Amino acid sequence: MADKCLRDIERKTMPEAWIGCVIKTKQHEIEFDEELAESARTYVEYVWGLNADELWVEQKLSLAALDPPFDAGGTADAVAFLSGGAILEIVDFKNGRGVVEVAENKQLRSGALTVFLALDKARLRKVKKIKSTVVQPRATHKDGVVRSEIYDVGELVAWTSDLIEKMQLAAQAEREFKENDGNRVKFDEWAEKWLVAGGHCFFCPASGFCPENRRDALSGVPLDVKTWMEDPDAQEFPDLSNSIKIDDPKELGHVLDGLDKLERWIAAVRAWGHTCAENGVPPTGWMLADKIGNRAWVNTEDEHVKMLVAKGFTLGEIFQNKLRSPAQLEAVIGAKRKADLAPFYHKPVKGTNLVSRAKTTRSEAASLTERFMEKPE
Image 1: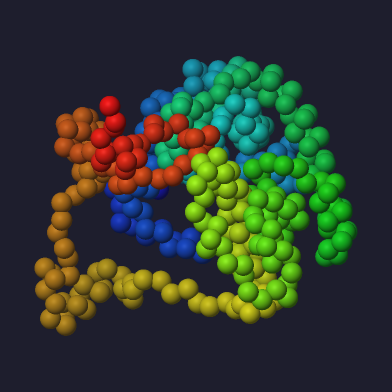
Image 2: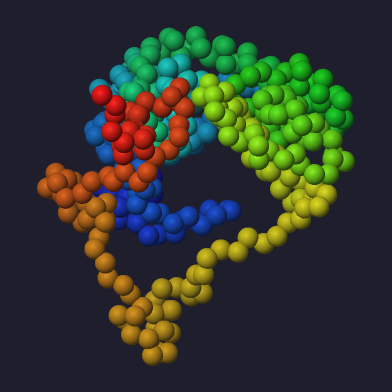
C-alpha cells in the first residue's frame, strides 16, 4: 500500500484510503487495518518529505555486476536522489518490532551497493555521499522511528571487498553442506566448522534442526526438560508447575532472558516440522490439517449486496454506519488540516508489557503496587 501511495505522484494518496481492503499474498489474506495504515503513513510521509530530485520505488536490484559466487540482490523500497544527485539516500521500510540499528548495518550497505551498481556513469560521477535510512514505526528507539547513517562512496567501495570475501566463504559452506547428503553426523561436523553466533541464525532455513541452536536454546532449561528433549522414547513431559514461581528477581530475569532464545527455537522447530509434513514425512503423532478462516462473502461486494436485497435484507441491515477513525478522517481532510484534528484524539494506554530493559528505550510504567498503594513515609 505504501508502494501504491508513492507511485501516485499527482494525487499523493495516503495509506488510510485503503483501510479495510484485503491484501492477498501467496499464503495469506491480510486486512489492511488502521495499525498497518499508520505505519505505512510514517514511511510515505518521510519519503515525500525528502522532495527528491528523482525517486525510485520498489526497484529490483542485484550484485550481478560483481560476478558474485551466487545470485544476490533484493528490492529497494525507495531510492532518492538529492542535492542534484550528490546524495544518494536508500530508505528501507521495516514494520517489525525488533529494533534495527543503522550503524554499519551489513544489510543496508548491501542494499546501497546494489543501488550504486545500477547507476549509469553520469550519475556515478555526481554521487558524493550515501545515506542509508531505516523507517521503523513499530519499534521504540532512542533515536526515533527514522534513523540514518551517512558515509562516503569510498567507504562503500572499500567495504565491498570484505563482502565478496564473505560471500566466497558462504559459497564454500554451501558446497560442503550439500556434500553431507543428509548425513546427521557430517552435518554436526559441518555446523561446528561454519556456524557463528548472531541474530541472523533466526532467519536461517536450517534453524529448526541446527545443533548449535538446539544447544543454545536448551542451555538454560531445567535438566529434566533437557533430558526429555534428547530422549525420543521419553513418555511424560516433566511437571514444571513447582518451578514457575521464582522469588529471586535476578534468577527470574535470567530465566526470562533464556526464554527469548527458547521461544525462537520452538518457533523454528514448529516451522521445520510443518515443512517435513508438507513434504510427505510428518513427525510421528502429528499431521497436516486445513486452516479454516473466518466467514467471507462468496461473491464480490456488489453481487452479494444485490443478492441479499433480493432476499429481503435492507441496506440498513447490510451496512453499518459508524464514526470514522482518526486515521480515516485524516485521509479525508488532507495533510493541511491534520493539526486541526490533533486535539480530538489520543493514543490510549491499554495495559502494560513486560520488556527487557536492554531491548527498549521506553520509559518505565508504574507497577500496580505503586499505582494503588501509598508509599511509606
